[in-house]
Image 1 (cartoon, rainbow, N blue to C red):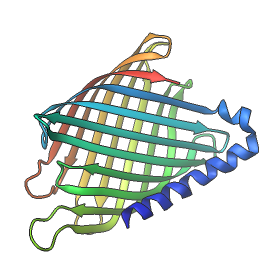
Image 2 (tube, rainbow, N blue to C red):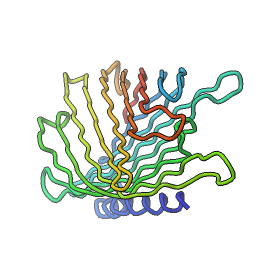
Image 3 (cartoon, one colour):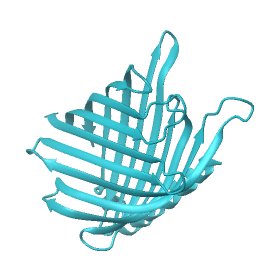
Length: 250
């Protein structure tokens, strides 16, 4: 059921992208695409304490009125033929820019993490965003606020099996990019999702620094923190990730 819902949401988010591509033409549309692929080591604490391999692919397409982004993250570790960490996360967002700095967003999120106490976590949110500060193309501050719906499936022992917890949520987020030089970039992201029924709050932060090595290849160091105010039984409230990886831009 959740896969059908997520597929429908992703399809709806990508429809504006298809329409924009038809209007602009194939050659012009191709110039609006940007992406990056990341691969590196990951050290975790909290629900898992292992050294893993992490991967990430991100895409962005932007034209005059629309900005569309998609990101896929994965982390996997195996020790003595046993999986000790396995996480997959997909985020898709489309923004309609109704002024130079203001936009309306729709965001779909889905995560499978075998060691979080959840079978899966999904959400669909929409709201208002504003690029409140900008300095050139690489330095800016985006803030957004919105609301939506969250669907989580909890792993429950016993004859009842898994249990679904769904509720309305409020979401606030921010992204700060600062170009330190022509070849170095600092980035800070922060998001808070608050449940409106059981008051469960999820807070995520990522601090990263990347520097160009040669051509389109960069080195990236990042520190991620995820905090749950009311985690599932036998799960930690806070997970942290420290990663050092190679980043390829295209």
